[in-house]
Length: 93
Image (cartoon, rainbow, N blue to C red):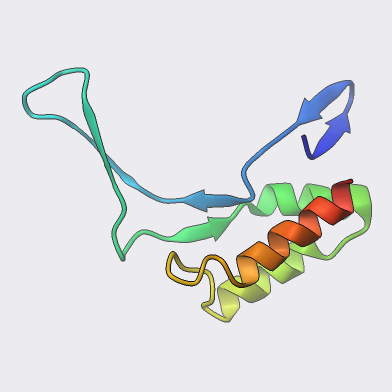
């Protein structure tokens, strides 16, 4: 849980992974999920803005800097995004 707003617990992913979802050709209830180099990895900006407002942080700016520096990709996901995840946890706990 990241926040408690209006009597409701709020939990959401920090990052959105774009994927391709396609039905199986032979089995109606099977799906194929694939990620490719052309699929983006994006910060969940509405969540970061909410956390900024609730906890007086600059997490949305940090997320924006990750995108601008092009350091938010699947290969380097553990670097800056991990630091941002830790900062988010510290701000909400």
